[in-house]
Image (tube, rainbow, N blue to C red; front, side):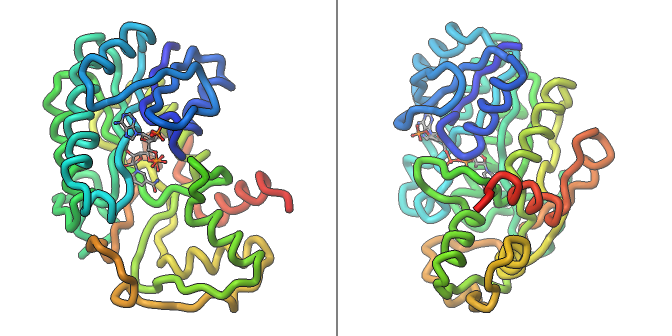
Length: 294
Ligand SMILES: NC(=O)c1ccc[n+]([C@@H]2O[C@H](COP(=O)([O-])OP(=O)(O)OC[C@H]3O[C@@H](n4cnc5c(N)ncnc54)[C@H](OP(=O)(O)O)[C@@H]3O)[C@@H](O)[C@H]2O)c1
């Protein structure tokens, strides 16, 4: 299969490219500033229609994984023009090119399209983002749906894994490093998520793409818990000192952008539909431990 990945230098895009390589797919790894670790590197700026059409011309993709985005929550709040250009207009460029090429488009969206007042959101629940990142993702979802491209909108949540993208550790890596350094740190106990192990997510994404599952699907971990309990589970799983964790509240953190209180995703549709099921956190952490021998 011919694949094109946007954002292949990112946390998730890198994992997708690695998995595609291991399956023997022909994979073009789109990047903007950081050289991607897997696949055939292809400079690709999603904000430029010319750059996008050139990438499609070279890759001739059957499937496109569109992961490129400005993902920093506070960054999106502060740099709204950039977030709009990349997350909204960039998605329009990719969706239009996918339509013209007859490629199947898998768009990575986010739990942050929800306002967090309810939790365990189902695919059909009303979206009501509380911050600019969530707004751009909701707009991008609408663009994908009306593009005419065959597509899947895959919403995920709080992705973690053994690899740091662009030298920026994900939450699990960061917590493990702190705990190993015996450094006490604060974690919010009143914000709830469904942490998602990147390797589990990638397997679900590939199955959905291989089967050309269309529509909207929540592809996330199967366990809902607070960020504090996530850090606690990591400490226990890795045999590290959980007493270093200091519970704090969302109000104490100096975030620029508002965060949803409970953006956890209900993954029962994915569980029913896919052979690769959303994994419970204990299973995911076991997988992570296997990847990170001391
Ligand atoms: N990570 C999570 O917890 C999470 C949760 C929910 C949803 N998602 C969604 O999943 C997707 C992937 O997230 P991630 O955490 O893997 O992202 P990430 O590590 O922050 O990587 C973002 C990627 O976007 C690329 N990019 C930025 N601007 C670009 C542009 N103008 N043209 C082309 N590429 C550009 C970056 O390329 P360079 O590095 O080369 O500049 C990088 O590869 C995103 O759409 C995100 O919204 C992620």
